[in-house]
Image 1 (cartoon, protein in one colour):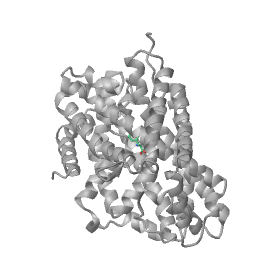
Image 2 (cartoon, rainbow, N blue to C red; image 1 turned 120 degrees about the horizontal axis):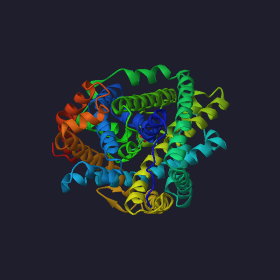
Image 3 (cartoon, rainbow, N blue to C red; image 1 turned 135 degrees about the vertical axis):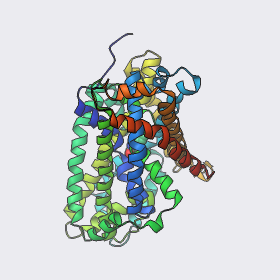
Image 4 (tube, protein in one colour; image 1 turned 90 degrees about the vertical axis):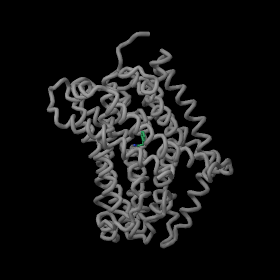
Length: 457
Ligand code: PHE
């Protein structure tokens, strides 16, 4: 079966698709939680540094490899080196990305459920001033139950499946071009509304006044891990997407734009969440439960005079999360789909079907590990937490070290510069700077982060 390889149709489509991969639950759900737990603004500063010094260069590296090789992420590195150590590094990312997909869809299912709970008024009805116990038991009962989370997860997986089978241009690109602007509009509306909440002042100062005494080595490591997760780095997604880029795309500018969009969305989510959290008197460190336990009540509390507005905000917020999760999950889906489609030479539709079946099976295991199979634990973590820990703190930095070393040391500098400057149609300065960062800065910082996570240093 020999057919022309798919490609994106426009530069705007490329930015929207890659930004769609980056902007996801990581920005809206995880970023505020990490910021809350690690001292607010000081954490954000480290996070922005990590994006500039590591994130953008590694995104350029992945774009370069993907576009140059013009094939799926697992095989792309082979086209640039035949050495067995280097030719297989794409598999680390492709494997990690596929694992992330399996627990990402579980959380996405929760978000879908919460969107319906805000539409049918359940969340609003549970509100008792100063008491989040109703939301706590709702969330606890829901995630630990057997069927309900599975049904929502399956519904979300099917949405991804149909988007992927529609193809690169008609599925991924078209949806991203609609969803991303919609997401941005919802975000702006929510930020404006939340700046009128009574706790806005406190929320803003938490976000923008750095307290460096709260920063620890661990928070620096977490900032790097969060930056990687949020930018969808080193998990094969960006490399796969770049294999659909045209030769005229300015990959450095695209990487910079995508990183800026992603960081803006993360900070805007903080602007939505922290004012609400502070006006409700909730501890900003309440962890992952922030979005599901603290927020529904916080929205009601912040706009207690106008319940209609509170429920509108709640609906918009969870709709925002669903859209963001969908475009990210689609990018994770594309990695194994493209691999299976191109390696086994089977139709894209069948490749996607296989991914769907595996994702449903592993997603079920992750979902059940929150309840029925909660006792199955390793290192004190259930399967869900273990997968998240393994992917974000081990696979991602490890894959990052290899990619940086590969582009900085194994690939010839001239091949990188020629490709990234579009055969010298663009100025060489930025490409040289990125190459230098990939050669000297990224491997050292990432190795330190990786060893730090393992507790070696
Ligand atoms: N970047 C996505 C988010 O912020 C998650 C993701 C990670 C997607 C890795 C693809 C690869 O939610």
